[in-house]
Image: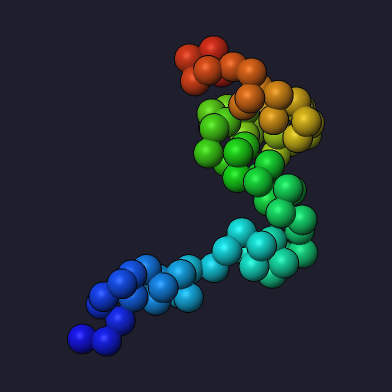
Length: 75
């Protein structure tokens, strides 16, 4: 039962789960840029994601909507 005591499972999970830094590096992004993209992806309603994709709103505007409005206000 090596690895099952003193947090051994957590250490193994950490080795298998990539960090934000690793993901950002793989995508050629900064960690901050990755965080912004994830915030938009997690918090923007589909209609606003579509407007962003089509260029009707900027990424800066999308981030502002995510950070300043609650979910109901975004609708």
